[in-house]
Image 1: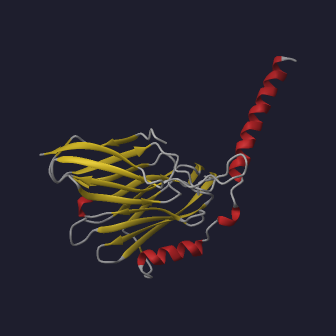
Image 2: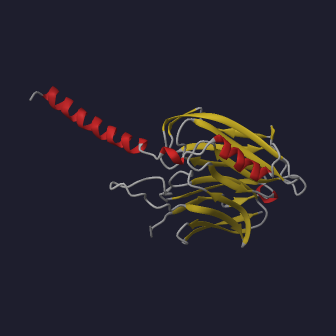
Image 3: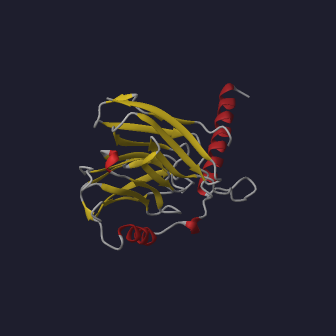
Length: 108
Length: 155
């Protein structure tokens, strides 16, 4: 799964103190380890087990995911606009890969 | 063969395909199903043994989920999200999934509003529980039953 596509939707500007919604989605099978292939062999688990969001390098939101998270995980959450800068999003795969996305924000 | 017979043959083939997919979905290993007791144990671990109170937390779910592979849920907690009083974590538990834990969200005053939306897999009709742990250590819970028409194999 080399071509993992992650998308994030963040408002480009916000007033200081305003509560903004962040929407994220990543293309990933979230293979649960419960399914079997045609020959009856269990397909090994491979999911994204952790999601983090940081603003200017400081973590502001984190989530642990288990096998019950649907394929192509969608997640929306809220943040209080505090300062201008860059949001960095990271999805941690069971196989050690980290998929990344970022988005700028201007807070006035 | 008349057109009608052809049409019927086509439909039959499609039905067979759908049927096969259905068998695939149903071929989940039953023995891995978790029990509500296991889910309760997981919750006790989250809350440190304390019984979570009702209220302050809202769990939004469809009453009937046609496809258990993708059931959207939203959890909102009534909290000022200040330094003194905020939600520390939100846990979502699907009692009868092979693995009851769905996701855990860690929050702080930086969130401003304690609300998350996501999509989960549900293996079968069951009760979904959401637990919020507050900054003062208290816990709140909401739960709802979801009827699942086609189970999500993922569990």
